[in-house]
Image (tube, rainbow, N blue to C red):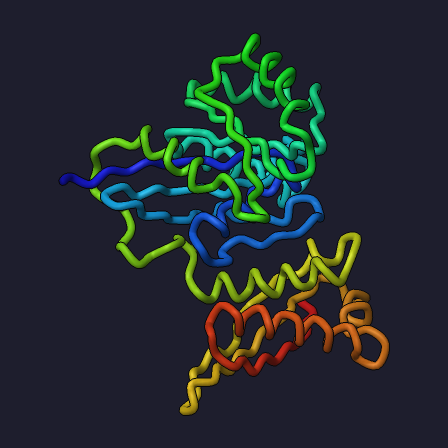
Length: 280
């Protein structure tokens, strides 16, 4: 039996649950999850193999179409459209509990023009009655050509298998791009750095999380199989250092302990994490 492939862009408003969905699909945490706007900066690709079919999912930044007024917003918009252009199919994810009709119509007007097949996925279905979605579906169907509608709960892992069963039907014959045991285009260093960025987003607010860069200085597997990691938190303004450290170093301690636990859960090893704040 010949191999098949399908490239899918997961698109939706910030906080629709895109990162949660891609993490559930691949079975590992490859994309950070946070309620703050535009936590997904990079174009992260998740790989799911189902028998002879390889599904490639692009986790795009929130499709809020922010104006390109700074370098970060330009990067976000570029990554968003790269995900769309590289895909064969668009999964448009909607937070069922927070539907903004004007925003939705504006988004679909833009996406329809790409001539890509579109599947609408109502996420967080556990928070709303399915009956309330029927008039919404009818309204969308009257305006746009949609392949099909499906309801899921990414957080509770409900309806995802059914979604994958339907998506596979759109696959086509092609050689696989990734090896059988690969689940993402990102390496371990990227994922570790993203986990620290996610943790900083959890504890710090305003502009700070968006103005730090993370680098790994050391990644070493010790003789007892523990892992020693040193990460640099690079800041562009010296005033951030005091905030990240917190009173008597309590904030950086909380960040380190939480991140260390997250990394340990992924690598199934004891992690010794060391953090250093560097002003450049």
